[in-house]
Image (cartoon, rainbow over all chains, first blue to last red):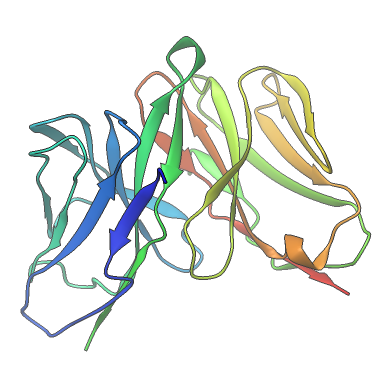
Length: 115
Length: 110
């Protein structure tokens, strides 16, 4: 059963803690993405990786870190430096389409709440 | 100015109505256009994909792209309560990144 899985579904963090969100895909996609979704703001790109052992900052990378040691996995760490981490976090991966276009498929999301 | 603008709504319509959802964009480099549907507390799912100006139809859904006006639309015919969701437009170029609109929340009342 192919797809993108994210865990946990809900995550609570205390002030000053680092937490790691998991994202796994078995679609054999090369590129993976992390987005943050806040009410009324759509999806904002945090980090993306187009190949193993390489990743780039998106529009709102401050306070976050990632790794891409395996093609299937792209974990996101929300560090204590992220001042407003409460949000819905979405992971996506890309299937290359026609003429170099890419269709992104999303996981079910992780809702992070800071206590 | 944001690269992609989408009216956040909310939009409320009676069952059976025709719904029109719209996005405008400013970047001429965008080559392909998508619509995603997102139910509450779920990840977005791809609904429609197109890379050329004109119309693309899939069942009750029609995606329309007008590159000259930098305007895209999604039409839903015979809307159903199950269509109640947030609809996100997304656009991409050869960078491998997508730019998303803010999303429009739609409610279809029985």
